[in-house]
Length: 366
Image (cartoon, rainbow, N blue to C red; front, side, top):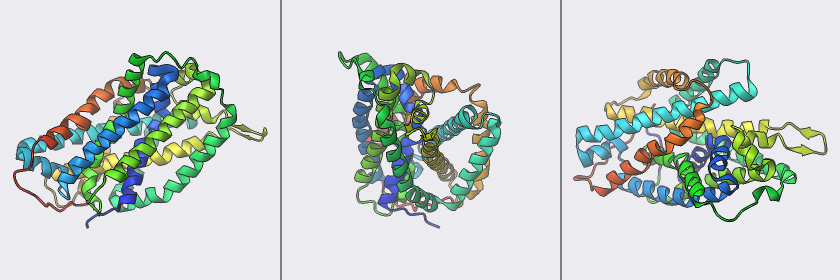
């Protein structure tokens, strides 16, 4: 069965993927590197995100309805093209495990403190497996359904936290610390904008291949704006010192909401925002992993790969990190690893023109 999504659904998937787990983690990484100028680094990175979106859509236009692995094989031969696919597969599997671990760490440290992390991972991974079996079309419709819910909750959070803002927390704004801002740009680019290379796998499944630049750019731009606004709010409400200290500053931000002494402790709103975007991000990366592996092995039916890959990712998500502080380590290393799949490999695929056109029909995991 052929999966097809429209351009609006594609925009929503890019939007949610950009936000992902970044809505809780980005403020601390930006502020810890660029201090009170972290939001400036965020705005600069939005421009980098637009350029990366143009890179991916340009490559996607050349691919057409040809899968990423098949396109790489057309350019560099069967074996070298398969190596491109294997590298992307490993990257997406690690990314899936990382985001799954982010979810488990957050739940065990903030909400379900007595629940073993393995149980949380099993429940979430079971939902991801079910969503993948349903296919990309069902996943995109799920995102389409939750998109207005996400926007309403975010706008509510934005206005409720506004009375707690202290503008002096932004000072001193000048002089600009260019070195620190550059570090912030590198960190924010790697997480999440270089990860958007996952849509090289997904683009052939969009119904209209004429131009995906607009939905791709708008999805990454709007998602990035939400991350920058959360970072700025964290600085204005909690100061740079507290924002850089907290592991999940945006979750702590929601704890500051107090309305007429009866509306308090509504940080669950932030948790719901994160669950929606994080679930879709994991589902997209896992779906891409299954699709890539199926293309590498030249299988007609990908559904047999779902359970084995889910077990591997589940085990790796537990063993990859000794504790929650691994997040700080991965935040420093990840941008350089993501640079290979997010920039170098796409450029290599763009620099060489295919010797013969291929109109391989893309398949869903069903």
